[in-house]
Amino acid sequence: MLKKVLSLVCVLALVVSPASALKAKGKKGSYLFELQEEMIEMLEEYFTSSGSLVMPYAVGVNMAETDFCKITSESASQRESKSLFFGQQCKDSFVDLYDEEGQCSGVFCNVVTMVKDEAYDVIVEIIEAASDDDAFGVMKDRLFVPAMDWMCRCSMPLMDKWMECKDGIGEAGIFDMLQISGGFDTTADYLGGESFKDFWVDMIANRINWDNIERMMERVVENMCEDDTQFGGKCYDYYWNAVTNMYQWFLKSTGNTPSPCKGKKCPESITADYDDSCSMFDFEQFGDDVTFADVEEAVEDKFCVDECSGLYQHVLLGCCSATMIQDTELSDSVMDVAEDFNELWEEVYSEGGTADYMPASASPAYMEESMEFDDIVGYFQDSLDMLRNPTCENGVEYSVVPCDEYVAESDPCEGLSGKKLKKCEKDQESEMEDMDMGARVGDPCEGLSGKKLKKCEKEQKKNDKKGKGKDKGKKGKKNKGDREQM
Image (cartoon, rainbow, N blue to C red; front, side):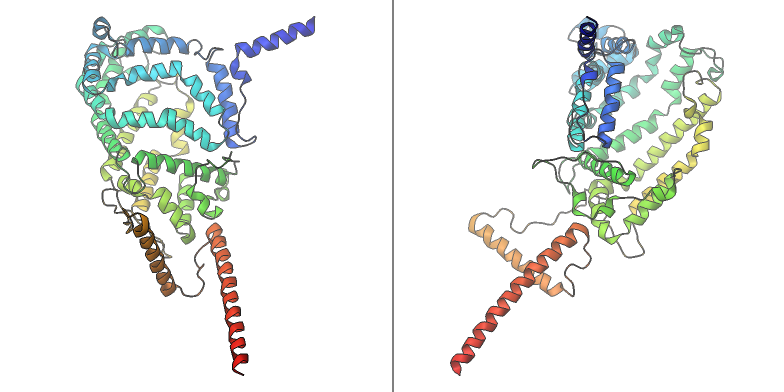
């Protein structure tokens, strides 16, 4: 009887908590597998058996959805009603934007609805991804591309509306709700005698430097949404590919195990064309206390390895990177925004106002012990300088050409077909062979390494065998002719 009861309890447990029945599909022991195991734990903590958020998160999301989705409602009364989070002035501005600019301000409703209805499924898809490529594919298709598409179309129109209406944010009821919730110290020193609501309304509307944020956002959108004239697509596609490549480098450099893709449909990686040493950075030499300066030094040293320069040129210094690196207005605005928030953070935290609900590791004192803000600024500027003008004493050079100046090498056979195409391709091969013969001095595999070197050496051995066979045949014919003459 007891065994039957225990069996029933186990079955019910699986029904009540489907997350517990999930299994990480990545390669066991891989970095992805470990992340998937953590995601399963997160699902069990934040979601119910039906995939819905648990309390109190469900209450917060439902409250936000009810308020935000008034903007997208077809009901005139809903559109005209007050907003808990935005206040009436901004609510009206966002309703107007929804009608004028391709439903751009619907993003608030769309995001909370996605969290409520789709977040669970997205996380499950990542957990069930068998390889790193599959996991990145889910994140790109379900999250990254939709976010970038919205950013390119809508972020600046929405920012314009916010700049017009932010002074009316005090109309929002959320401040009164937080004040009476009991979750915040409404008499903290940082308030300086002001009420909780007055302090934070002034902080959001006036003390945050929105002009600098707007300038930074404008440059980010311009750079991310530019056409990639070198590789095709948008620049945000290029940056996504760069991140996936650097993820592979991270795994190799830290000794973590990848979860590789298997099968014929696996995407090709530029990293595979180069020696493994090009994608491994020896951070262990610095011990446990690795600093940004150590990382910077390791990257600079690797940048000047001739055999690896092609990889870094492709992954890190495409025309999109060149455009962003040379955009000094972007880098200046990033620094301005960082400095603005650093000052506000120190001012609020130094008065002890956030100590009750912020972790100690977020305090300026803790951050000052671990790394000075000025040091971070210095490393940021040094990194940009290195990328803007990558120079090496051994003569390794990089091309840093923005997309609006990039001109791809033209294909002389483009637009041809049939016999004309074949003749053109044959002519091009002949020209390349002539160039190779004219330029070849010594070892044709000189300067190559890794897989390229092995491939070249293999081809040379084949050519040598063919050459010897031809010579042997010619020699035999000659001897035969000599005998006939005799």
